[in-house]
Image (cartoon, rainbow, N blue to C red; front, top):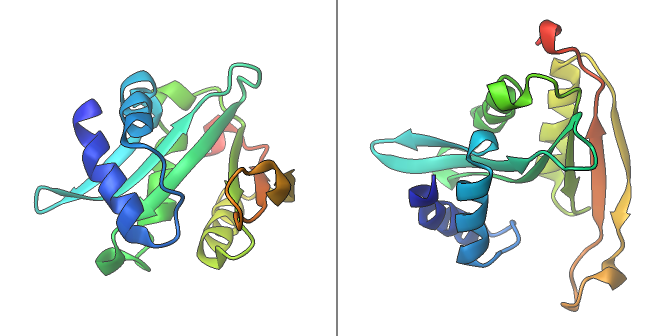
Length: 156
């Protein structure tokens, strides 16, 4: 929901590791892709989120744009829970792959996506997606695609 966008943006900025996109991009994600974006609240505050969408050219895929959890609640499996909730959403009922891109220095995300693949009892193929020279900002790391699947919707 668009009402969640500002809180998601603040979590991203506070994370220290996620790319800061414009507040407008989170409004668009929360409005146009509300069926594949999830937030978790604790004491009426958003403490975790996943923003995702179904690429039009790959209808069997759900692409995770970003996933983030407030620092005080990290390490409790909330990220895996968000991914699990995502693939169980009605909007993902025919999804057989989950994709995401991760930088080489983001070891926590790499571990989380590999653990999610193990949870689904499927493979996680990792390959270069966007080399650093494609990014206009100097110092941005390359992004590696984590392609998880196939998984059977009935086995989830």
